[in-house]
Image 1 (cartoon, one colour):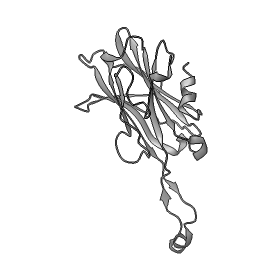
Image 2: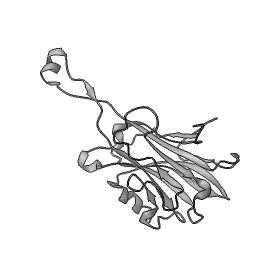
Image 3: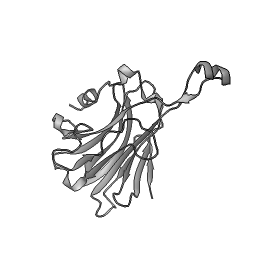
Length: 205
């Protein structure tokens, strides 16, 4: 049975799930439909404008922390570096629009293969070129992070990010961390106005 979390809640991931090593973390979002004004000649003729979805490019990333700190740039997994140097974290690649059902970006993790020096994996979603495109997470709906078992796609954990993230350009969605030789998941849901992934990373240095 899936565990639905609220912001700030934490739950055991591997404790009680004997043999769970590989997991899939799915992140999803949808652009909000925006009504267009006017509509030109045909819009005026037939009664006004329609609606459209803005082209918002959200990027999911994983920060691999040592003692809660980002020790080096190579410990960030994202569309430009899709596999961690240790091979335990693999990114599915970039989704440019967020349209369609299901996960928009997927990260596969082999928990048993994460080197011992890493105590926490932080999952971040930021809007690419948010400032120049004048975009923010108030233009996004149905954002979530979830944890699945690979192969079966059995959903273990889901956290729906339902807060108002108006004017926020990056989201620290959740984290997976070691606790007493087990792994736990924490629902973070913190929005920031960081313009680039590098600014988010700077928070952890």
